[in-house]
Image (cartoon, rainbow, N blue to C red; front, side):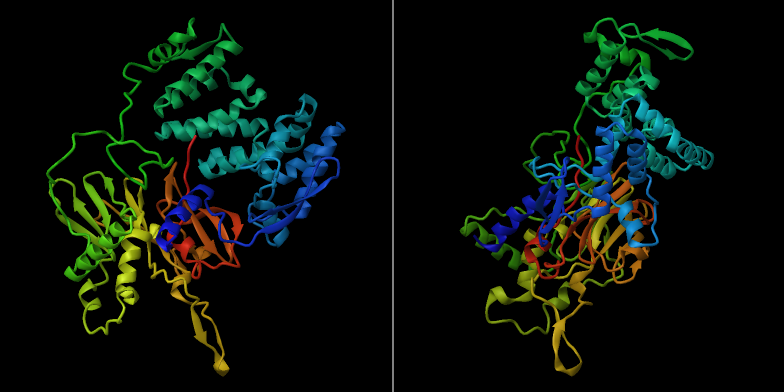
Length: 546
């Protein structure tokens, strides 16, 4: 199998496994209930032994009905400090997979297991948890409400979910997302509350009606019916208050969506149509987007060149013919976006914005760099072999085989893309050190890149840059290599980055590029991105789905 076919298969694996490729497997001993120890091999970093022991001791305390000790240990796992001054505190802030080999394809994280154990406690255990941690949670919640700080609400939910204040914070977050026009984000908050019988008892039927509203607004009517059916099963005679009036719930489950539409107001149920914009790779966060259909256009409305030099066009046509002769699909790796009135498309060296109606180029990036396609074909000694020509190799990669370069994303206001990607040679960069020794070049440009945000309304004005050697607008991301286009979701930006031998999920403020939080996913110290050509070409981007 040639390298190009390998890269395409590798791409499917990387997108499926996110960042879990290319690293040295890490061995860990996983402690099972009863004291058994199992050896698990994984590329994911194992939870520190101290944290695993704390979880195991909490489980044992629950089995022996020592709830006081159990809530202490579980509460400490979840309420760890946001920033630590030493490695132990920093490790406690992170989450880790538990490496359960008995569940192929899925792994439970340490903190989600701690939350599950707290939620499954009997009333006596939950009362103790509220007594020990409820006051801290309430104080944090009141501070967040006083300062109108949404991020602090998130922290209350994350650290103290199974307290009364944690439930209230989650309810407020759900309402906030719904008010902001983010029904899916709101639905996830409301659904989380429904997993707790105590929270359901406190907030239903309002909770289930809000959840059904969110699912319907998100285009998921079946999930909305399911949420409404839950009310009928739990409280057949339930009623809600709307505008000061008591409104009984529907009598027949088949009428549930009509009842909801009537309660929420005329015109509430929007018709489900495909998207009229294409704002990311494969159209949606689930990578399975649909678009509004139209008649096939046999005559193009306009054409725009993707190569800015006749020689490049000739080389691309030649390479395409080679692929056709070898039976290799000639699917391009440059994926345009359709945002508002613009088409955003990559050329082998630039990003250009094209007016959707006229086909006229309106702006390009990087504008601070003069077009250099002409200089690439002048004063150059050509290799004797065509397949050794650096320009031929670069064109082949850019047009067909470089997913991180060819993919972009947009939230409707900005377009996000990677900048500063060097040619993907897969060769180890070296440097001559003092004394004539040859060693790896740790400052080689192929080890780092930049993630940029361009303002669409301001004709591509540079909003922020993160990455590069100094991190630019976010020093904590100095030396990072971003593996693929970011995912704009729920007002934040999610991206996978390789930094200091680790692959991390990084979450950024969408307006400033400031780091919100990050989570370590895998070790890759044995296969640096600059020498792993397949992983470099395939890239990796987060996805999101229900």
